[in-house]
Image (cartoon, rainbow, N blue to C red; front, side, top):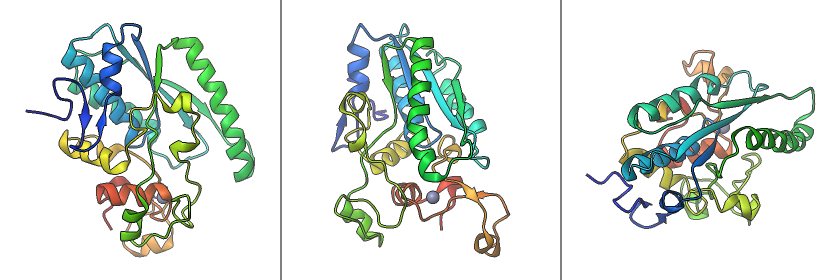
Length: 259
Ligand SMILES: [Zn+2]
């Protein structure tokens, strides 16, 4: 049965072909593969297909090093427990492949306002990336960055967009276009969007095990959610870019909330 990675290690939805995994397998200079994992849907899928490609091609000398930069100021986030579980699920599917222990680095908002924190984050990330590179010495660094959903599809779901294709009033949307070319080139999903990712989740049978423990946006439950019968806990906000794209692609928000 074809699970998306065919014999030639190309991941496709029948229209777009992602060749990054195949290229890594065929590149003899790449053995240590670092993957920045965030807790969302996109980065564990990079780990999944990398592991699957290593397994299919029996390239066991190529090893995966997950790296997680954990924002401790998001106290409601489930990612501290979900990211390790995500990796365990993938290890269970490909027990022959080496997926190292996650290198976790924590950072926190030290009392900055939102705008300042966003700026500070960039510097913090760069520092953590430097630490990771010094510690792991990877031959390549992968991440889950991708393009936004097409404007036409967003319109179909009733979301107005600006001229850059960003959803209006849905918070800051960091498109892959803003990532420097050198970093962008290594991201397997840099030419595809959330629909492609959702297609792979369904095709690979990851909706039952992996999807429920992916987090794009969880906030503290607010009054109108509680009045809808939801317990006071972490829930998707349903109005930010991440929530909107996840819902359109998967038909569900975080925690499988479907309406
Ligand atoms: Zn949200």
